[in-house]
Image 1 (cartoon, rainbow, N blue to C red):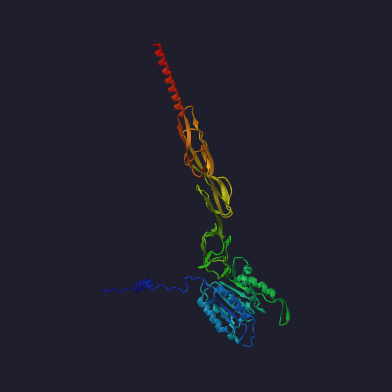
Image 2: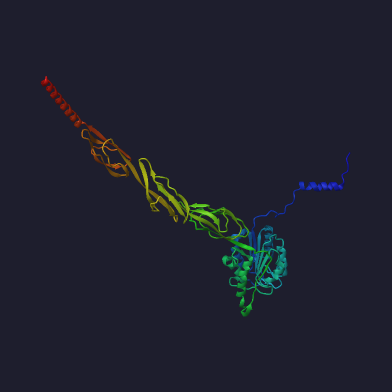
Length: 519
């Protein structure tokens, strides 16, 4: 039997299941994208209506501003409207394009250079009657949908201060060329205020007042404001001399910090690395020598990697130690301007050539450090190698020495080889036995051994030398073992025995004769 479900329970069930069936709606700009820069630049020098006089240099000012910012902000990120391209509808459409592209992470710039009136209206190209002009409230309404919290508005027009109230707001910096009751003057090269803004952009290092390698809207104003005031002090207007300060630029700054427009990145190494090597990879581009300085759009993140070790192949190498800010990573990301110096220590190679022994001290050393080198003499039973001194890039005669590594060093251990000469002799007293330097000529000799009855007669040398003279010269080019050979002469002994026998025989014969006589 079916039961009725209370309405309140049914609604609660639907509300519980509905988020599962229908995914939540995500705002268009909910996901943070990489920061970008967007701009609309308007310059009107020549007007459609002959009743509105020309404004010399205004279009040129906008064009030059485009030339300075487009290399870093990107051509496709800037709408440039000059003269006939800058009707009221064109400007509104450009602002709509701006709104449709920017988001909360971006930097936005609106620039206008042209005529303005004391009631707070800008004159587009087709300005004629009131509805064709752009009021400060209209421009404010067009810009109000901007999500960006980094908005710069620059107005170089007469009575520019009239726009301050409507255009100011949180996250905005408004630069106005004059106070609400002042004219804005121009020179041969454009509006005076813009001329100095452009000069500040061109002279980054000078305009960067706080030396943080970021050029902000506030710093542009700090540079241009006094120059503009000075330029328009005691001037001629319509051929009449006007004494005093005639134009005072105004800034409304409701950005919490400084609103950067450009940042500068300068890379170098200490010491300078030899060119021709892949020193730096920046945003996937390789540089084989120290690159020039870079000017970037603000808030972007750049990836860089440097060499951890550069071996020149000539006995010198460079080993990365740290960045000037203390970071020790060879790969890092950069999001702020500045001078980034990669510190390297220079090392020199020490090589040691040695025919004998195993020398100690070979390897790489920090430039200026001291290396200890050593080698030991070798003595074997019949051969010994005697260290005689160091040669090459160091000289000395001690087996242990200290070498200052102020350059690559190639050192040689020098040796003298000695060989043992031994003489074996059964008789006599041989001379010449001992240690001799290789290549030496050594005199060997032996004295015959003569007894009264037995003589030992020298017959010659054998072994590692052959000869038959009692005194000989031997070249010691290897260990030598020489034997003195002898012949034993018994002649005297035999003669003595013969004499003894003869005497005995004679003596025996005499005794026999005596016996016979007695008988």
